[in-house]
Image 1: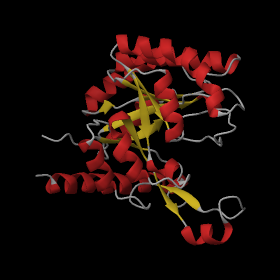
Image 2: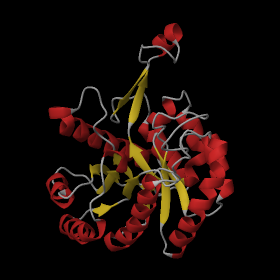
Image 3: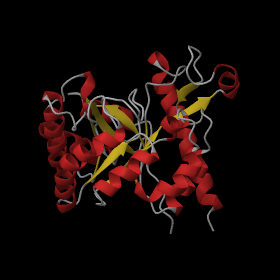
Length: 296
């Protein structure tokens, strides 16, 4: 029997996270990713919150598909030290909550190229990956550029497949995988469907975020101009066919849940944020149903 991906949403992690989950559960979300972007502020203590999150999930019949802790563990200064501490705390919290996946950035040696960051990646992630494997956990690297390129960046090297190959060769353990979404790849002009056909077995968690790529703007202005050629969208308003995405994931053996990543859509934001997320939830559930109906 084919696995059907659970569909939920990313919850911005803060002290009221359990309360937010309780309020959203009535809308039909099946799972959650409490996410803590360290570049926007310190992470609150996770362990005291973990028990509350687990309790509200049991109360609402939902679950946590992944925790999210997004820092730069390859940084050699205080920022890196704090990122590594938060990742270790996230492993304890994940066990308490009952999830096996921690979404994160791979990090990057600040302003170095991706190849120049590989040795530091091995040094930091080998012990983390080994501990995660011993505990039945896994880290999933989000594929967000964070403004970086192949040559330079300061947050995340794991934003495209050439980097993934270097990383997974450096630390060849199954406790490292991908937190994938099509939007970031589309903004790099990578075909997300073709990519997913190859990488689906490595996908441990999916962010439900799509994009519109305006080829007419690209044809005139290219990628390095003040004219924007791509916009992040919630699923259902972007260019991707999520029924196809789900089918590729399942066919590739991925059991990843899909957590809608809001707060990016140029239309459904602010007062319309929940409206957009509920539209995405309905769309993704319909895609899942179509996938089920098309299955032999």
